[in-house]
Image (tube, rainbow, N blue to C red; front, side, top):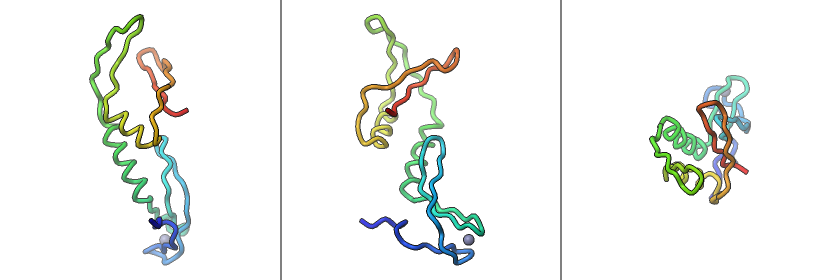
Amino acid sequence: MQDIFENTILCKHCNKKMLPEQITRKGFILRTLKCEPCKNLIVHPEDLKEYENFQSLNKKTFKVKLRYVGNSYAVSIPREIIDFMNEQEKQTNEMVNLSMDEFDRISLIFRR
Ligand SMILES: [Zn+2]
């Protein structure tokens, strides 16, 4: 299927050709088309949809239980987070990086 951004798109305000540009929001790379004179910005519909899915997850706080397993503790990561990560990465990454960010905060890094 053809990507709509492969076409020439004119700004509805200035009638000038909009130019491709990538922007980053919270780790997301969004494909955009920008009109330089008036700064009109169009985000690629697919990227926008994924970003909106992320935002709905981003707003949630999950209560998960700390369980003792062997000599370590384990928490369950909600399925919807893993499903979302898999959708982004297109594959399951079994190894994640874990670090203690602050005295009361731990981060899991899913990207290689
Ligand atoms: Zn414009």
